[in-house]
Image (cartoon, rainbow, N blue to C red):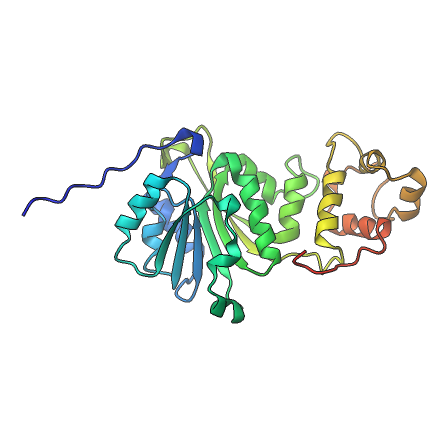
Length: 286
């Protein structure tokens, strides 16, 4: 019998931001951070050569891996052909309807998805926004995501520190953020020029709690953070709010010269409600 021909692994594609995690201890730590998966459906974003996928496959009830690179998707289908609960989808996560990943019968039972992935650096923010939208629809429970350390620091930053900004506020309106671990470039092939940090997100949208509508408050936050060097009042005036309107609506807990990055979400929500008194919470999956 002729010897088996080893499957040739495709080389990383720089334009796709491919940096494959090769540290075995790191891969197990990342999967372990999702907890018990025996009854869970897991979505893996950008599985690459399957370092996380191979660990996930025997642990979760159902695994869906979305891979943009056709060669890598083919490799994964071959490697994991013995796992009937694993589905490899060749697609772009930015154009995939996450709701279609849950069977209709499971949707009726309130099934949610856990997410895991080593996110491509160049589209991390876009992926996060799609996950937040799915979280508002009640599709997602938690996520363990690896990304560039500088971006992770921004997501987890507290108001008043330099890293806090629009993405911080948006993230924290949609999820509870926990920083888990950071890996050096040497843990990857090829090594990136930066360190990578793993975050755990527990999806818990705060729109109903703060009595604001999602679409309106998202737009309001963009206005508040439009010019980082400007005060909150100046950003709002630039967006068309008159000084008299702002003075009438201004909450006592916000200093007149405050910048948006110095404020927690609660006073910003209070200002939004005063400026948009008819907004209300509205449908949370708006």
